[in-house]
Amino acid sequence: MKLFQRTIRDLHQMLLDREISSVELTESVLGHIDAVGEKTKAYLLVTRELALRQAKAADDRLRARRDVKPLTGIPIALKDVLCVKDVVSTAGSKILKGFTPPYSATVVDRLESEGAVFLGKTNCDEFAMGSSNENSGYWPVHNPWGLDRVPGGSSGGSAAAVASGEAIAALGSDTGGSIRQPAALTGTVGMKPTYGRVSRYGLIAFASSLDQIGPMTRDVVDAALLLQSIAGHDPRDSTSSTRPVPDYLATLRKGVKGMRLGVPKEYFVTGMEPAVEQAINDAIRLLEQQGAKIEEVSLPHSDVALPAYYIIAPAEASSNLARYDGVRYGHQAPGAKNLIEEYMLTRQQGFGAEVKRRIMLGTYALSSGYYDAYYLQAQKVRTLIIEDFKRAFEKVDALLGATSPTVAFPLGAKTQDPVAMYLNDIITIPANLGNVCGISVPCGLADGLPIGLQVIAPGFREETALQVAYAFEAAADFRKLQSPLMRAA
Amino acid sequence: MPEPESELSSREVEHVARLARLGITEDEVIRYRDQLRHILTAIDALKRADTSTVPATAHPLEERNVMRDDRSEPCLTAEEALKNAPSREDSYFKVKAIQE
Image (cartoon, rainbow over all chains, first blue to last red; front, side):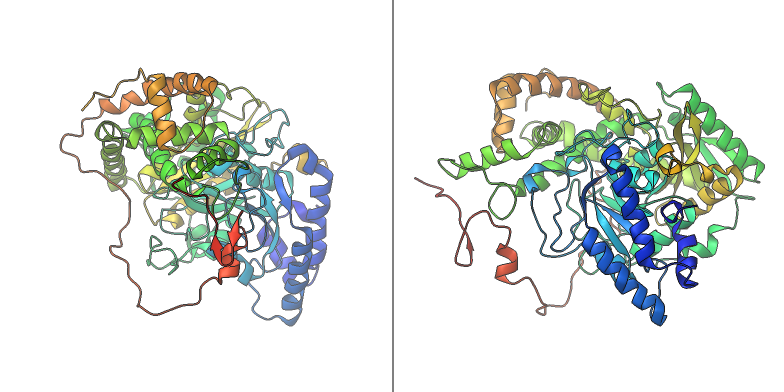
């Protein structure tokens, strides 16, 4: 087994035992990026020198046995929406081409202080708006399980990097499914923590009441390890929670015996592929065999979650993206006659089609005369979604369903139809609106393409979601599945 | 107050783009009008939910009125804050005249 194919936990032990150095490990991953990077196009920027410098520093730390943490010396990829001081960070947008942030995101600082190694910035849909990574302002990403397929989105580059062996783990961000859906489509594990669990400071904003950073990994243990290091209160993000962070590894292996797991009947949506439905039913049965008590539950407002999301998220985005005006950073259109024209041209030239569509949709929903019918109604529906989850979690400990109704679809299949594209997130969006946490874990293949099981737990019960996901992973043993690009090496 | 309807007009698209300070071409006006109509039709399902007695949720926070002590802390230097500026003069961002 090559070093780049391994997990954080294995590599940590090997680093501790001085069996390998972080420089060797980092070179192994960088070498694989050289080998397959042109196939996946997962990275927008590979920070080779920075990675090797950090790896050397990590080796010093490991040699001295000074302050060694689980991520010391581990090569990690960062979604391009995360600011890294003096490293080009564009959120996948041309409007931020060449932008070098003057500070790092808190999650980046935390990984850095643990001694992690930064491989680079991963491709994503522009400003995290999309479900296929085809909205990147630079180039699309190809799924390591089938290069003619999308990797999902918006954290498609992070997912493809972990699935192909171009990173040991990665960070993504999830506003409506952008960690979980690409994780499902690439056979990796991806977790959206509860809003407030992880600081958003230095995350380039899409929809500020929904955005959350989370881990994308090879298995559930690694997800727990990575979440552990990024979770917790940050004085720089007033929306980050002061609740203490539990020890996620302590409860991970407790199993599901006696746990009550709910299956929302609404999550078996119209248009779900039969192979996906079959795999989810098999997964549910497997958890039942492990001793969980399975109950059907209802989340009656699931059908209006998607419409509510496509008002709330664009409305917040239209406000957040007002900052890209060509004055303080980013692209500035040349030759404008006056300030207003400069704004108009800068934004026309800098933003891609989907971002413009959402800015207009959001501006429309917030505009005079439409606010009550759209934005206010969507916020009320959000309350109904929250109440749905509260009622369900009075009866069960966690919920089970598919992450995505389909496996990875061909590149270009949905680019002409925004509504068809939006439907990809139909079972991931409720967790963002309902302020709960969710994780996607591989649960099988259909025609060689991965399927993801979604486990949803109440707000700030990440340990519960991880515990169920781990129990499934351990019993099902899909963990050994590797993408052709990872295997080929 | 006009009733929201899915038949968005080209004029409304132009108006919204102007509000958003987004330059769009004539072709784009037509394309975005048609796409936004399609999206708004899908979103109309929102009206199905009975929300007559439901309060709105703007954010999911438990914390309220988060304050910190009023003391100065290190911050970016002017040079750091200006390093990405497309146009600058001395330690200022330079913008075009607002009035001609």
